[in-house]
Image (cartoon, rainbow, N blue to C red; front, top):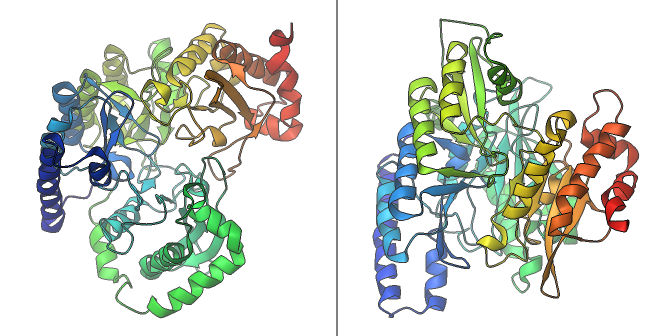
Amino acid sequence: MYRYDEFDARLVRERIAEFRDQVERRIDGRLTEDQFKPLRLMNGVYLQLHAYMLRVAIPYGALRAEQMRMLATISEKYDRGYGHFTTRQNIQYNWPSLVDIPDILEELAAVEMHAIQTSGNCIRNVTADPFAGAAADELEDSRPWAEIIRQWSTLHPEFTFLPRKFKIAINGAAEDRAGIRVHDIGLQIVENEAGARGFEVWVGGGQGRTPRLARLVKDFVEPRDLLSYLTAILRVYNQHGRRDNLYKARIKILVDALGVEAFAGEVEEEWSYIREGELRLPESEILRIRSFFSSPSITDVSPVPEAGPAAFRHWLKHNRRDHQTAGLSSVVISLKPIGGTPGDATAGQMQVVADLTERYGFDEVRVTPDQNLVLPHVRNEDLFAVWTALVDAKLATANAGLATDIVACPGLDYCNLANARSIPVSQAISSTLEAEGLSEAAGEVTIKISGCINACGHHHVAAIGVLGVDKRGEEFYQITLGGAFGADASIGEIVGKGLAAEDVPGAIARILKSYLAQRQGDERLIDTLRRLGSDAFKEAIYADLAA
């Protein structure tokens, strides 16, 4: 993993000192909340319904054991004993006192962490495949490139005040686990006909009130040209992006307005001025950054265990992933206990994960866009010991990728932008599906819930999406069907009228029962939806309600 150099450390320390002074001035009244808002947002501090919230950056989702241990300590010392892992591979603390936040940032800095660019109209945390450097289907490890982009984009003077927030994702595997098609810029590592590696560049994806899938603007950018090409895209956006309308400020709207060919032409023109300049990446620098990232090499190669308790074998079936190195596996740690809050982990659970990371995980753990954790490198002979420890910590739910592996935003329980609650609905769905045996029976299913149109729960790209809306002061929930996050990305379609919260779990159970009755062979729900269309499930959704 990457370690801070002297420039990283100095930048973070200077920012903390600056913010400590700003907090003091807010507390003693020299700054109003309106004056303080842009300052706190630059440091990852939001004002939610009940308290300030701190969002901590976890670049490309990668953590060392000491960093996970620090996250646990902060949750216990300054919060209410837990943290919430997000769909952007970050962690949020929902209850810190404003006076304590500079101290929290000091403690984070001690383990090379910060909260810079986790909010505001800047380039946000770069996301990547949580199995990068481990996945069996990987062409190239995307982490070095995510780190190069992080260094280039951090406090970039030209892109600190963009028309709107800006999100970049990078993927180096056959399966897109980073969601490049729903980001402002998505990068896919590819190999051309000559065997050289470079990047496909996709632009203009995003969710929210106008969901869009990114369009391909360049089929091959050489590694040395990556930063100059990204700069060209950002400059075109910075110049032409809307600043007069918050809802039309994202780059997806600009790409729509210009048309993808005209947009790509503008980028090419801008790129022609800077391609041969100082932004060209030297091979020596690429190799230097790559040297921080590697996959473990082992000599004691053991097979995946086939014996053991039924619960252990069930967990292996759903939560273990093949590794590119013989004798190793990747393990998904589900943060989706049945009836629990998606993405939450207690201080004690984070301490257990830190211990496992140190003892069995080659000192690396990842956060996923699905609000789970991953130990990317585990020896096969250690899988039983890892599972046993997870059982004791109540972290061994065997549902990774199943219908009870629900993604949900904090919703109206915390967020002042939300229209409806997400957490209680997700808990009820999880309990209902498990009680009826539908999670296991339905196999690979994605269910995602957002408490408002901003879509932080990524409901647009779930096979079953749930969107909370407000109707004259009452909470209702729209069902969307047919969305997908990966290489076959698609935006789900709204099916019918909104449902009351208490009707949502039953409706989703009926969708899955209808799917089981109509699927062909091993067909996934998303494949059945694409074959039959969402209307084939509409009657099932509203069946009991009509009665």
